[in-house]
Length: 217
Image 1 (cartoon, rainbow, N blue to C red):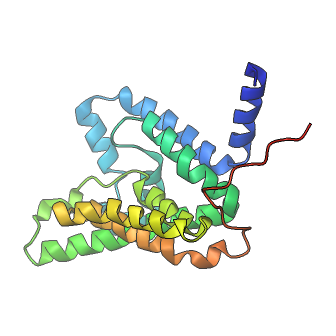
Image 2: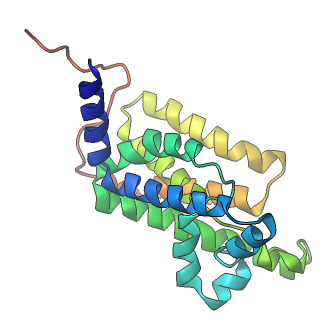
Image 3: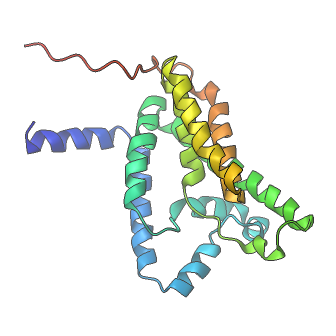
């Protein structure tokens, strides 16, 4: 395959997952913007867009949307890979509307539930009061939800191996030394699995052993 063929293949892949790559484009722009901020201003700026207890109690809709448009690590390339590996196939399979519904449910509900658990911990004296202003920003809850919902894209028995790997990946941090973010990721996985009604009628399951048939000629 020549250069033109490769470019055409890449463009076709991107065009069939418009939501994924528009979102990824926004993250690229915001990441570049973060690199032009001083470390002190960056922390203040991100905290105002964080889904922490303080911001959620004042402007919940604004921060739930804004928090999904920034990456606190400042590293965009790993997310470009993860979006292409998980989000793009999920969007192509479910369609943009259903894929976006999974993302929104995982991001919003995992944020609210994890912060609710943190608030209870603060009230019970198990976490410092300063945690109400903790930094909780990024796209990882939505990603965890999509990783989970892709379980239903895989045919049995491979589905069970994939699900086991997903659960191990997200449960191990909880066992090693849980944080409210680790808990949020696990909740997002459960939400993704609960999105099973959204996958109905979305085509046949994929068998990892199968490969596309070679063109005849």
